Amino acid sequence: MKAPRSVRHEIRVADEVWLATALLHREHPRRRDFEVSEIVERARQEGITRRLRPGVRVHVLLHCVANRPPNPAGYRMLFATGRTTRRLYRPGDPTHPARRGKTVPDRNAVPPEYQGLLDWYHAQYSARAAASVRTDPLLALRGSGKSLWADEHADDYVRRLREGWA
Image 1: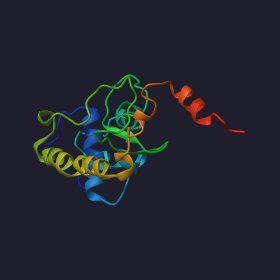
Image 2: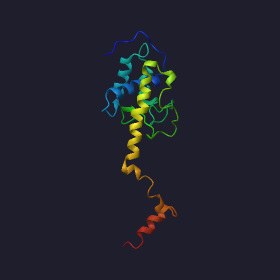
Image 3: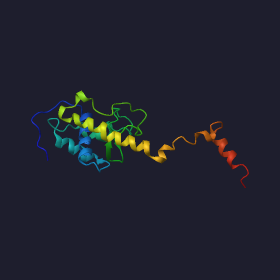
Image 4: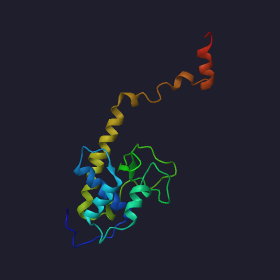
């Protein structure tokens, strides 16, 4: 366990949650996601602020989660992979339509010793996800059949295909 630092930083709870989750991903690159309790504990261990603020847990559970309804925050920093599991949000992840908030902390709001996490996220974590979507052969087929019924309603197309069936 890491000893608490003597220097503490003023940082938004959402940014602290993102940093804790990013640290877990970087420390455990083979893990797909993390339990809410693991993220909260990592934030406590890191000790970015004087003490773990009560809002950290609710941010991990709800406020930062892109695919949950905003309540009230609209951040898109985490993605719920299960009821109690989270990972960092990646561009292209499905989000709740009412969420429009930030996906990563502002570089100027992050203590200097953590700014490398932002570089890691953009260069490796989110870039790897974007590359896998572009090269996936099934995802590449998306939209390829829309010309089949471009001139008619889908129900009419199906009805036409079924003509003559016994």
